[in-house]
Length: 121
Image (tube, rainbow, N blue to C red; front, side, top):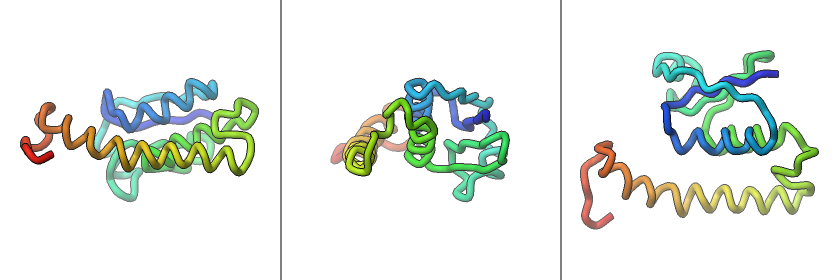
């Protein structure tokens, strides 16, 4: 089965899925970013979005996409090998999403010009 990832170039959110795909030897094609295509595929209208070519199913939200890609091949152990190991992986994914991504975004987005600088942040 082939997978197409719709995300802007350099998206750190897309990198999660691409890293999981690399470690799991899963072929994921990154489509040229088209906001209209993302809006049509994602219920939230936001990227990244993964589309499965064979079924047409769409997975949205970066952590869900990365988890899906990591779970495709159980023989690699990327997502763990037991319920407890799976939960440990989930713990670290959630920690990164809640404790690292948000502060990093608040610090980086003003530098990139996505939002105004906030000294308190």
